[in-house]
Image (cartoon, rainbow, N blue to C red):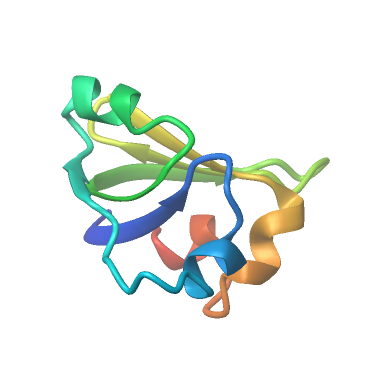
Length: 94
């Protein structure tokens, strides 16, 4: 269980955020703020909260990070895992 700020890529690739020319940091949203998270759909944001459970699919490589009591779940697809240099999110944020 970890209380960290995670860069989440909601329908966007990590490389897009790293190559952004505007230099503006993504907004920080609490994992418990449903309205703000819904409003940020398809945007790059930082989400802060307590990760209470992690998991991954052996068949597809999909990683899951569950915040709180299931308020918010990060899903990282197998093809995006190479964007995490420190390892798979389900292992790093355990």
